[in-house]
Image (cartoon, rainbow, N blue to C red):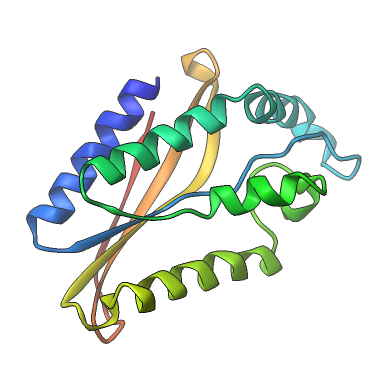
Length: 173
């Protein structure tokens, strides 16, 4: 549920902030908005479900809620999701997904890198001791939980020289 997702995210934010890290929540890309003809046939049912979540507004609700929580908790938000929404006004973003469901193409990874770099430089975070980047990186459906959406959140802790000090992964429902 959205409530479980936000509770998990809140716990991650609290733990990261508790160690004195500056935290950045990097919002994900959109899901597919259509079922592309080149989607492997074994994934068509799944692609229909993710397209329904995206087109029905469920994904928007989850991501906007997550960004609101981050802001309420004093976590910096790097909003890539809104960039994808803008792109969706002029093209079918399904074709910007390498698997035609939920993972961006190599070219679209640049959007994330550029947005994150600009944010870190503009906020002066490049000189901070530790920065945690929370990336809601994969969106999936849990078939065992009545097709509930969940986000796999990975987080990485870096020092100001770009050295990785730690990492973790959680599934947030």
